[in-house]
Image (cartoon, rainbow, N blue to C red; front, side, top):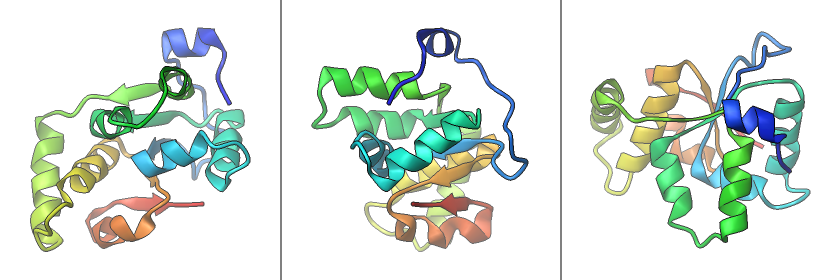
Length: 147
């Protein structure tokens, strides 16, 4: 799985072919599993890419991914799949805090709240292999999609 170098170099945004899939953010779990050939995540990601749906990842999810264990080749491939790694800004931080407080201040969930905040802030659906981790945030505007 990979994109041509021109797309990676420019981080261009193709027009989506379907109105309901304007933009997708990947969660770390989805990205990891999408690198496994023939996985459900791999098939979904291929379909989105072939339909020119922009694929993004928050800087928080990227940091989680880079913690590995991954090979250098996997890191390069993952970067080629993405249209953009979205920086985490103060608006995302404020929304992440609201999500954390609204969902019970559960230990170990702050990174998920930050990933969700970046997706909500970008107007994107969040693709995850662990939908249970994010379903409690749907009432705050998060749209979760999974394999």
